[in-house]
Length: 297
Image (cartoon, rainbow, N blue to C red; front, side, top):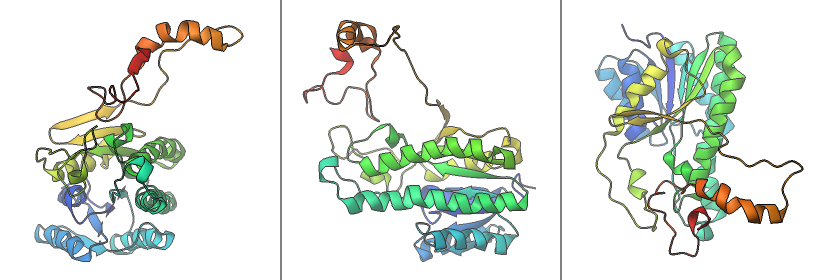
């Protein structure tokens, strides 16, 4: 018996890398899986792997960046497996370019898949989960790139948007027993090969098995995790890490509000030392030699 027995699942971008790992682990734990990928051959390979191991799966090439594709994808799961109980929004793409050179098409192409695709697939799945009365689990995919990362205005921005959507949907969908969480996965994939350091140069990263994220996703989608919603976790490798909720930090308060003169007098000494370095590669401070200095110094 698996912890996901009887559950119908959809994984977008399931043909390779991290998505493939999600599909394999979900099926291993009893879920029946729709493997969605734009590459039909790679998606079918994962379906065949699952079938060879005794699991249930079917392939989909639906375009999640369209309403028609999202609707067809969720309907396929319902038709094939009797319902939709799990959605893992994993599909992604990159069009890396520094901010001043990025084109509208490069920006839009990434938002279309990450943000629009996550929105439309999640809405279609949640509507069906609500009608089923079964509850369910939606797992979104973010990235530490949303902390800020060189050459990834589109990708980092989309991941920040998905994190905010995760918090919002968790609040709205709780009444229907639908839980919404996100993971920030790690693993060596075609997308990780595009990673750059704070100087904009390629960085060679050690190999990390991308399939390791699937175990935590399987737990997160199980009934044992029915108390978890509105959270973001760092997963993969040897880690399970909670990403802290966004929150206000240290503040200054003054009756009647602040004048520019007041701020000139107090900001540098009071809040200046509290300013944090920023970005995915925030240590050491990336731009000390670029005319910008941290912490008001």
